Image (cartoon, rainbow, N blue to C red; front, side, top):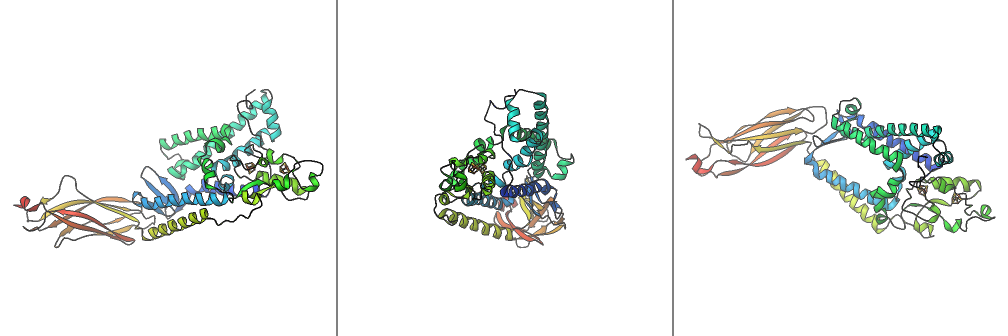
Length: 444
Ligand code: SF4
Ligand code: SF4
């Protein structure tokens, strides 16, 4: 025997169809399309979404964000965090059942492959409990080969958001990227072949802090004991009580019995709802397992609006308005000025004091046209400025010299404030720095 049944309690899930399972399959299809197609999409010549860690850039929907946009990224992260709190308080584990990658991959790849190769749940359970035969061995080998292929596919899908879809899939990414694909494929394979539903039960942090985010009015899937109990008995079918068919238990991918009340292991997949809807529907009764809340199951009124959701909604509104305002005033290029290393000032032969700077300009706009920059210096009367006039292609950056000279007199302070204005069609930035004259001692 391969010991599939004695090292842990394996869950053999009965396949089920129904309204919610069809809805989930559409959601999974959309999410898989998003995962595999997005890295190939380009907007105005740049990736629609790509995390370029090597150059510390984020391409998102036609724009490029760099370290200078940290505030915006922070707001985005806060928005995502509070959205999660808000969403969880309202809809509980809807994410787990319909959109979590673990659920999507298990239901898109793992369970269909398992059913295709090893048969229905009762056949799988019977074979795994029996001796190691050729029929069992080749089926396990074929299944694990397909799991490995699925793990590789999924890893390539995720890595494409870092390495770029065309680069990764055509062998043009670097050894680091392919090494990460190999490591991630091994992790996904272990998850698909062994860990499966245990990930939700033991590892997922979201599942762990769910109970702190929900209350008795949060959407969940529950069994109605007021209609379902007492179970069984001769008149259960006529009365619409639970007939103890166990179908809601057999279809549960988490291996739990929803009739025991809400459990943390429940991922809200609604398989038990579809199962009971089918069973009770045939008997002419309403399902005993359905979407609801602890309050509605206890016969109380459940409203969406409550202090917790109102606070989350207010915070989300504030964050969204701030982010939109920041985006509106965002200048899609970077400019910074620094003094040329090793020289504070130089005395020229014609009596001028010269300061040399380096100006770093970067065109972060994803639009296809080049951006023309005009540089001027403010705050120094009569300054003689040699400023760069330059055009940069999208995503291009350049280091340029900026030379400023002034005729300093005896009363000129040692340090003068100075502004460098960098103007382009898309906006302007004003940089502050200082001009060093060296003071009287240096000129005497
Ligand atoms: S109890 Fe129902 S909703 Fe929860 S995981 Fe099991 S089948 Fe899915
Ligand atoms: S599917 Fe419905 S009737 Fe069957 S055991 Fe579950 S709750 Fe009872």
